[in-house]
Image (cartoon, rainbow, N blue to C red; front, side, top):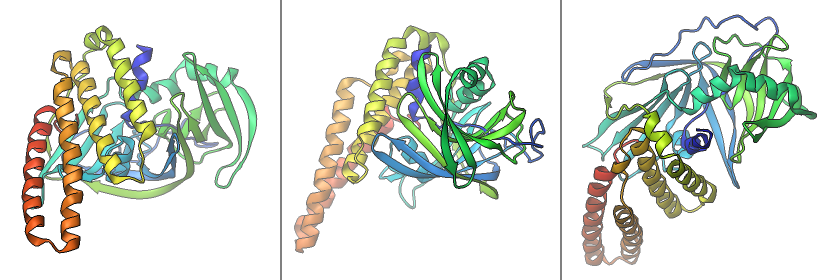
Length: 366
């Protein structure tokens, strides 16, 4: 089961926070509910940088201190999933990650005038926020804190002096930088944020900031600020389309396949060229294909994984669409109106074929 953890690299995570006088005092902020159409409230904002290999991306996340849920805007959801925020199929609107329930992703499918607002939910089992919460509450984390090599990590401009903890959990090396000072934040869970954030340090009986978190899979989150806010995001008019549970038996039986899927996902995210929009589109498609395979296994239907033949057809169509789009643009720039009009009709036919195949094999949420 350990190998399965890094398959979840595309999923969104959540860390922790705490401080003197605040340790052991639960938040009095209203928790969010795991419903399709509701209003989400967040009382803290976390900013920072996320890195995957050579790619760096600024993050702004919203945190509820009562339940540890994390709100993520569409552009950040897209980056975490290695997908474009908006494509011909639709766009990401928002996501909420619950450590005790799962993740809920909101999106809008289709074009203007023919839009469908949908919400996709993944249940708690094996979700990244749940795994992090369990880690911070477990003896494994306490042993990590006690046995890690501790070195001074200088002063953080917002959180003061820090220490770097380097050690192993389940045989994998983690590097976690933690502020020495207390965090003036009341938290109900043991741990809130996104890898970085605030956690309850039981050994020192105070809440502390995690300011930098480096995973064994070379994902780094560095926190720049963690400040009070009152951020509200209202969901209305969304239809739920694919709530699903994890089938543990299927996951165990297909562990080696899941490991291969996870390796391919890690390779996709590691090699994305964010300066090339065409490369982003192709990487996003490949990630959707791997996500579909993962979801087929975890739902107990490994036989429903997309075939290599269908995968090849989708990738080939996407490549044709990219090339045809460039051709149409050149005709437009040269003023060749008839050639451009014909090109646009051909492009629409390619897009229709692609969308039909995509919706058949890769529904929203993978």
